[in-house]
Image 1 (tube, one colour):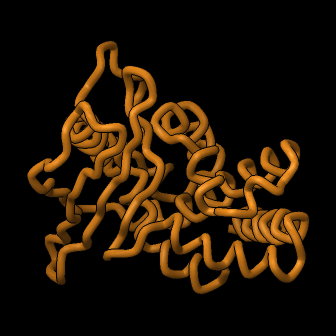
Image 2 (cartoon, one colour):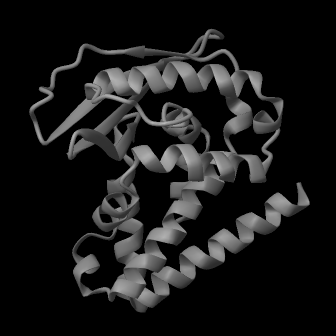
Length: 213
């Protein structure tokens, strides 16, 4: 679990940066255009907001609740991460895992916000079809100070007339697949309740760290 968090901490901010924009689109938007619009708006907002860059947890949580959730299917993301064990969990356990997983990503995200400065996002040609049930939007993050571009791809699923993000890929590694291995290991060892406890304890520790910051 620790290695998973360390790998994502420095990159998760760019993963979700494209999701925090005020309000939802009035009309259906193609998945690639949706990600482009959100990324452009939010990168500009984050770069100009000193409180977000400083890691103001209250402000970050408010942004996550009001602006990320409309564009992410967290339950689908969580069920895919839990994998075959999801069907064996009770509705209450499923609810708790989803809440704790969402909180874990929020804390991880908040710890990386200060990294946003002059990065630019470039989008690859869209190869999907808006009539598909699921598509992938590909991009890369460019650091003007140099270094290799960071691959950043989004997997979206059609939800009625809109699109929801169900997974993200950084440097060739899908977030859901990465967590699936650590989740399965914990469930095999301690059961579904063990996973809930692990996530809850981790979030309490992260909350304590934020409180001391």
